[in-house]
Image (cartoon, rainbow, N blue to C red; front, side, top):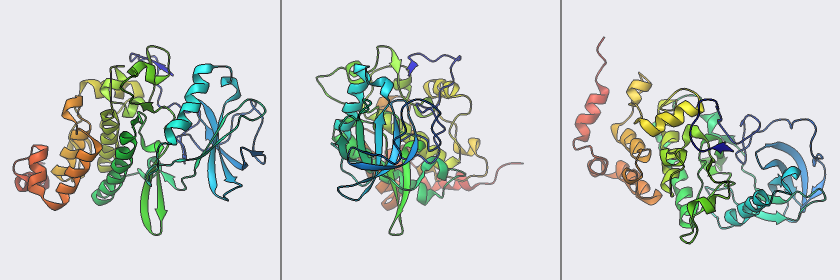
Length: 346
């Protein structure tokens, strides 16, 4: 975990301890580090046959397995044994199970079961296995606008469901989104609600974090200004992160370069540069770009009020461009499109 306040002596990019490639639950797929707790591959734990380790995260190891009672392929998240005697982390782990159990949506990888503690003290959460590529693997170049908005719409639908259940993900990023193909249709699923917070009106923001005072959790590259500054935040912090992801889908790169800390400082102090400046030669519909910029407005009050409000404007972009332009502050959509299409001066 990173201390609150952005220092240049640190360059954290993620809470994972392996590279987040081919993620399933926001952790990287790769070989385990040598030593440490006993290997579970090939064993039956929590009613699951453990088939393969997918990777390690800050709190636990994730395996692919088969749920013996149902025959389903699942992801099994086992708490690291060295955390067993840390009550706060054990409670966070148990709380993750309670939180994710509230969610039931096609664009979210939900919970299947909760396993009993195994002999070396590890607690288990058994989740749906999202088979596919992480969005970070898909983002090797700008995506066609139609595909970018199709994925964004699905992510918003998942966030609408989670926010409606009172949950804020607060670590939304391409590594935590799995792109699947189901019956020839592309579907994106949000994974890893492990650091989600419950928006309980009777619980303080700091109390809801289950972290020590002054600590910051999340990934700075996609972190909202208020979260990076350890200020109070709500569901709109997820909308900011989605705005960065959409910018990356449209432009082929994030708004700012540099270390994770450099980017966090830029997100706090600067508006994102125009995509035409960031990615010369990439033509982006001004409504799409304005929609993206509203998602990642630096001030909470300037963002969409909710995922549903963003979905409504996204629908307007397709059905009534002039009305969408009014919502997004573009009074002459046709002229804006003409400006975008003008050749650059030599």
